Image (tube, rainbow, N blue to C red; front, side, top):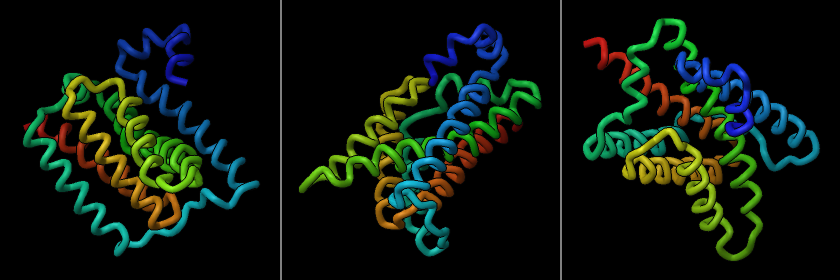
Length: 194
């Protein structure tokens, strides 16, 4: 989808205007929701599950620790600095894309379809599913340049995979992903205004 979207006649304008992420993630979001909706009509293996504060607390704490540790070893990626310099509408659309559209779509695709498809592979299916899903998740984020960011994304994805398997639903991983991205984005926006 990312490759096909880049062939759109207006993609260069969207990219230069800082609107490529909202454009791409709106397409991916619609696709992911449609695919999940069709899939769940026929197969009961990909439910939303339920949201539980108790089940969110420990993984949320792990993600906070991971982010603090990441920030100790790395600064913001170069493209992230551009976010604070955008016009208000662009900031709003990018924030919506990064804090809602991307987490929902990515959880459906990675912790939903990809992880779900690997669970029945055999003796080490859960471990191999977590590793394959987390590698795919980390390397799909091609906008990042620092090696430490890929390690962060791999561990982040691994935590969400374990949460997905324990909760047997997508609601908690989606919520944690939204909260994580919101913390990062709003942290960047507010630190740039100081």
